Amino acid sequence: MASRTEQAASPTLVQRVGILIGEIAFVAIGPFVVARLALQASQTYLPSVVHIVVLTIFFLLLVGWAWLITGERGEKFYKAAYEQGMTWPFLFFSFSLFLFSLPGFASLTSTLSDLGRVSFEPQIPRGDLSGIQDFYAWHFLSQFPA
Image (cartoon, rainbow, N blue to C red; front, side, top):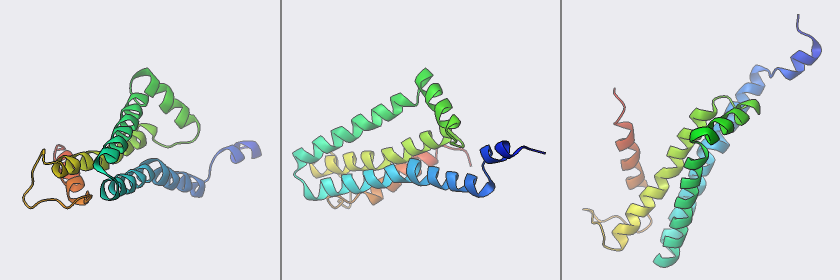
């Protein structure tokens, strides 16, 4: 029979489910929602030059995130996250990077359309990222065998 300290150190099923929900909400979905709202608002309400600055900052964050989770840094980062109680750090940080990148590439594509560098038929409304974002998500997912 486990001692009282071992039982206290071992999380219960309810605690594990809570941790998993927190991981999904704050590591995967949270950054996606913040990026989506910020980039859509930036493109809709700010001048193009200011939006390009916001987009540049977003892509610097994206590159920093990718740098953080790769190589030996990534191994150390995943190990530290796992020791802190994160269930599957590699899965969550990689999947959340994918989700975080969707609004950025959608906004970049939409911005290029607004500036006349690419064209779509029918034309995409300024700041409407949903269709482009879906296109990128489906294109990525179609790479996996069915």
